[in-house]
Image (cartoon, rainbow, N blue to C red; front, side, top):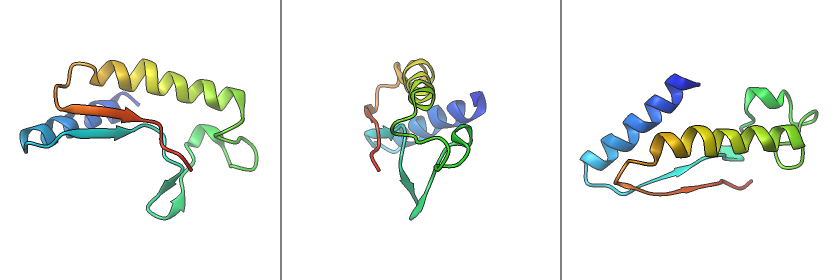
Length: 85
């Protein structure tokens, strides 16, 4: 996970160097026209990303503890959103 977060920070910086304001969507229900479910949810039939308490806690930790902390000092980050399904 650490490498993925570092890559996201680098992507935000690349966007900034091109003069772009960058918006990060933390959790996305649809990705490239198929349902994307993080591996830690197993299958959507077993762990629902919208209702399972453990999954919701994991998403909160990812968004607040990992992404928001890593991105907080990036001046061109205009927003971080929680994607919807």
